[in-house]
Image: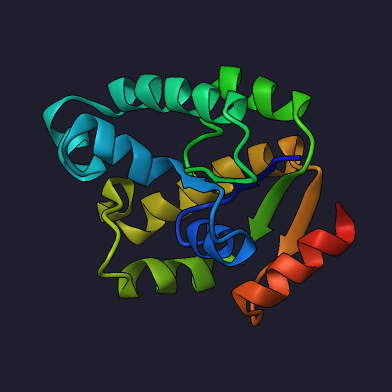
Length: 162
């Protein structure tokens, strides 16, 4: 059974996916970057967020059908109604939740991942967080508060709840 991790930027989706299943997980953002041959930030700049969301939708559909044990989605997976409807139909959709200040601190300190939407002002990023939070809550089967927990503790909690 597939576990699908959702949540805002820097919620720990990729990190938890790696801790959850060393072999059969997919990080959608990394997969997309490989397919498009550039970073998501470059793609946003060169094309658009809308074009990216179309590609994300297709990669997500393929990943769901491919039988991965864990799928780490991008923070914006809930932007499209199509994706939200798909997530509602699936089981084991896990919202990795943290407060905005925690996430924003992680975003600022993360030098490894490019997050084009995080380049906006703090107020704009917080507005995006607020808009998406309702979508995450709506489609999730399980909500895990991640603050102060190691990836392994989050994995254990998911396993106990699913």
